[in-house]
Figure 1 (spheres, rainbow, N blue to C red):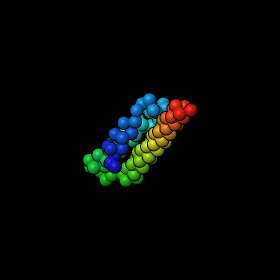
Figure 2 (figure 1 turned 45 degrees about the vertical axis):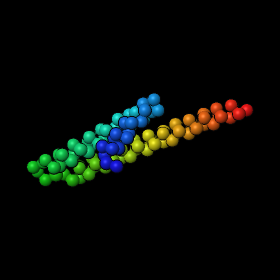
Figure 3 (figure 1 turned 120 degrees about the vertical axis):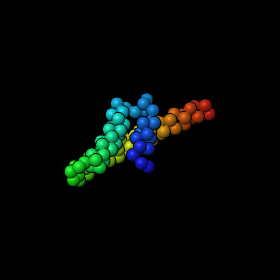
Figure 4 (figure 1 turned 60 degrees about the horizontal axis):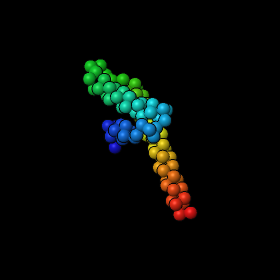
Length: 97
């Protein structure tokens, strides 16, 4: 999965499923990718030798933001799915009783 697909996947999660902290994480995914893309351009278009330490630092922080945000979104999705199953099981039990 490339960076654009990760951002698109993170943005598809419905807003009502996410808490304010998760919404901020989702927004940071895009910011992290934009930072990474800008740093790539800066390295490629620079006339002076690129500063690889800075580039790697920016890339690793963007990667960490993406990983953290996706983990939070995944956990929230699992909770929502389990909650829906629990409600459905309760409805079925109530109807058969």
